[in-house]
Length: 373
Image 1 (cartoon, rainbow, N blue to C red):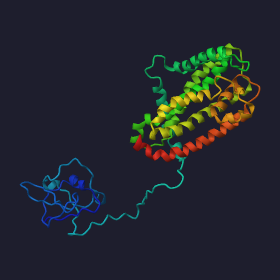
Image 2: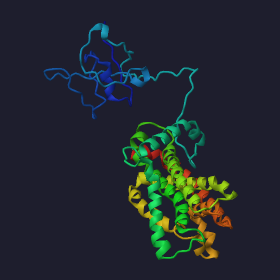
Image 3: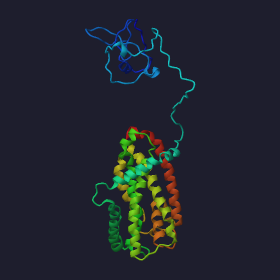
Image 4: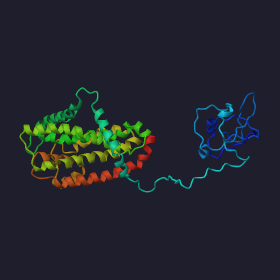
């Protein structure tokens, strides 16, 4: 049986010769190797013989397996030979025709504003549940005190504030015992600070998962922010006990408390979108976060009431979203007569603006996460 010549289609990689395991025998004129430039032939065989490389059809056109584990140039027996498509000398191999019953999918890069793809996030809602559950399980794993850390941090901060701001600085607390006044603000603030820190570092911490499998990257900071609600619930039980000890009964305004929890969650999530995307590109964000959280603490009325701010600027003070959250907690639980309405409205508008901008920026940078992280 005469030996046939086979051509390697233009643009096909040289390594497809390996999985076919062809014997390097050739009866036609010398054929230059597609791997070398300038028409150089490869040296095959023994004793310095010049054996040209056979030209083969492209693997992706004729369905040959793409595998690299076989040895090159080994002579096979007849039953092991793979039948190939012969081609005339010098004639290019035409691509295999696409059946008419198969649809052709063309992949093109997106243009214009990035799509938020919120439907995709809804389709992966079960993944969000498992990521939240995973964060909860590993949060206090191998710790001696466990979930007690959710109470220790705001409680001892309240003790420090009571000594230095309540007794020494004599900061007014609007007729409420200062420990209760401070702890009522520290409960949402501690949740926000921890959620902001974990959410901003979430993409870098889950780098291996992001680089291996595709899923909406929004799930990662969202899971870190939502998982912190457990700490908020634990520390809130201590706040209820302090209300009983000081004899303060919340009024009907306490029904609005879930709205302020939602506002704190959206604030943490919105800021985490910006910082987590920036943290992938610039690792300086990790070192900037402690300073940012500390500065934000003193810019929020946690240790002092918002009434110390001049009334003309009190509404603009709501540009800090956590100012509206803290004042809302105190109004809902401590029975303050006047609701901080303008401040809460400004805080809500600020959170919506930061959230929408963060979603678009996160989606725009999402395509680079797997390569950079």
